[in-house]
Image (tube, rainbow, N blue to C red; front, side, top):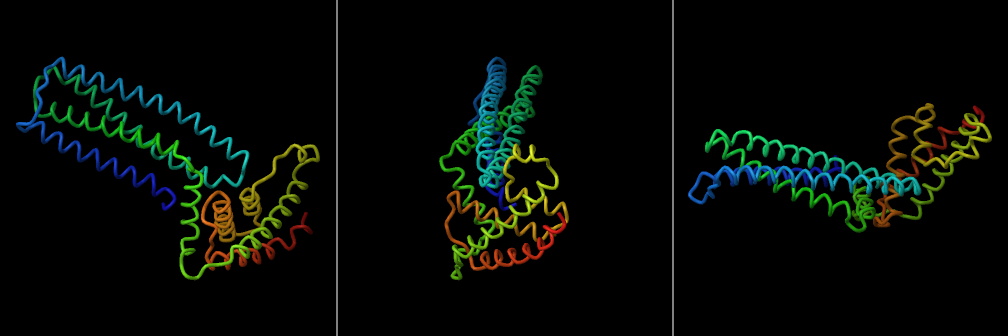
Length: 283
């Protein structure tokens, strides 16, 4: 939940904005400040609203597809970007789903306003028109926010900082740990994972397949060990947190760790060393 807090907060803000605009515009529509529209104006306004928002949404979706492919390419080239890129993808997906719902609602209300216009002026028609225009404005603002969020500079660095805040929130306390000690423990953990990965590849692939296979990431190696019952779930979760923390530091987060993170890395190192002590004999 903390990881996706940015997108959830934005969604709540836009939902509140849509509700406020709908209430205010409907209230104004039934006051002396209301602007009277004839049938042609209402039909033209509703038709244009649906066409414009659909066109903008289509362009936004097309651009995002190309951008998402670029993120996937960066992730493929550098496995230390996996956590940050996946978090960005999850955030963008949540925002895109919300925008899609807004756009569909806008188009539906625009079509409904056109379909009901033959009935003449009524309270229901006024509500539909005002709520539809509120949805249209909210959709435009949400799309603008989404676009600027996607193209924001240093997005990987900012997402890495968020991940570090999630994994190691106590690093800003008075009890700061040794970054050198943390990295030393992590490098030993990585060496153990790589050694176990080499033994796994020797046992499951031919020499030709090994020469063609890609380097497996630390998380992939930990996942293999979990599925083969070499490590338990708690150790796997701690490995995932350590990998996330180390990768976030590499990609722009503060080079600071808490004493708790250093102790956890030392404990994970000992547990992993104990869990893999017989793996060579088994292979």
